[in-house]
Length: 130
Image (tube, rainbow, N blue to C red):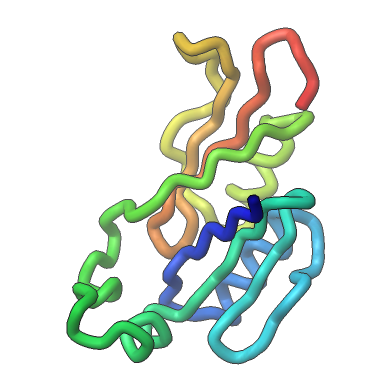
């Protein structure tokens, strides 16, 4: 199974720059209407303009642009150094929601909000490497 997580974004170019800096990699696909970052062999993070999904699905989908500032998704990434990843996100325009803290499910997790209002989490299992 391949997993594609697609975030609806206000400005594809701006969001591409943000995720390119945070993920420290170039997109695998970057064409008008879609940017993709391969996160693993079976998982891709996509960025689609809000206007693009609106054109694709029309009136059957509430307009994502109307949810400005309302978290619409959470991207939870298990990484080797969540503090460094979180700091990189903050340095590139994310807003901190919660610093790196040991959570009751055993992961250490830092939470931020990306420029489009999606919750971005960087985690590692307590006492282990990602």
